[in-house]
Amino acid sequence: MSRMSCRIAPDRRILGLLATAVACAAAVGCGKSQQDIDSSMNSFVQDMMVKRTPQQRAIEALQTDNPDERRKLLAKVLKDKQATSEWAVKIFASVAKIDTDPQVRCMAIKGLRRSADERAAEPILMILNHKDFPNKVVPPTDPVRWDATEVLAYMSDFNEIPPEHRDWARRTLIRLVTDDPDRHVRIYAARGLGNYPNRGALTALIRALEDPDFHVRYSAENSLEKLTGYRHNRDPDLWRDWAEKTENPFVKPEEADAQDALTDAPPPKNMWQKTVEGTRNLFLMWQGDAKESPE
Image (cartoon, rainbow, N blue to C red):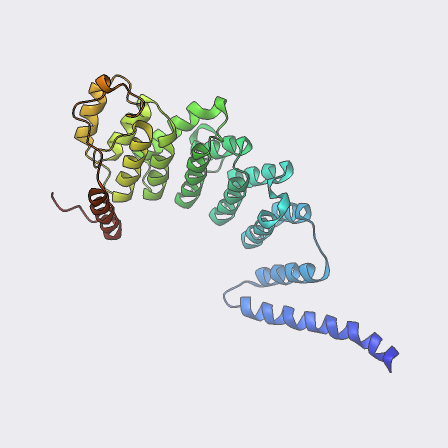
């Protein structure tokens, strides 16, 4: 009896797996083509029966014509501890530049964000400057530019842009905060520019204070404070006047000699003033794109 049960147990296990596979196929079947269902079934069975390495998943992602499968396979590579290895970064970079599906490209960009070191800088900058690489980079959609700009800002925050690419990164962020039609791109570009003490970056951030989107203006003011140590309540005219009068705007107030401090610099805010300003900023964020009330 025990010998029979030993033979039957594997059969039951396999039947259970097949039953689960059928149930999964039924769940994803609505609105899917037969090819998509077959691909999902094959992927499911392989996952259940064979333990694939991250390298194998990455190769499959490069070979399959199904964008949904490519995205899922890259997501599994992304979760693995080898996601920051040299081979993984190269695959993420290649997919992020040339894949034709926006969701797959965004997944690959998330892979580059996980490493977020100098290896990710060049492919991210190539994506954001795709017109300079017509045969090497597929033009990015809004979500792809959004994710790529977020990674560039993140890497700038942690000083992970290699020296040879810093000027390229700064010029890219200036162009994005000034001209990009997507508000999310402009928000992250404004944030990233707070890491570049440069007159061009300063001018672009002051111009961004006139952006119709409050979140862009808010990010620009924060970056201006990060660069200079001052705040002017998102008033572009006050900022322009201050910048023209200041020989070196990137010397923080605490670093400047008392006699060199601007006489019209805003006095330090007390706790009540900070609370009022914080509450007002939260209200303006909640308003979204609504115009601010006249003060």
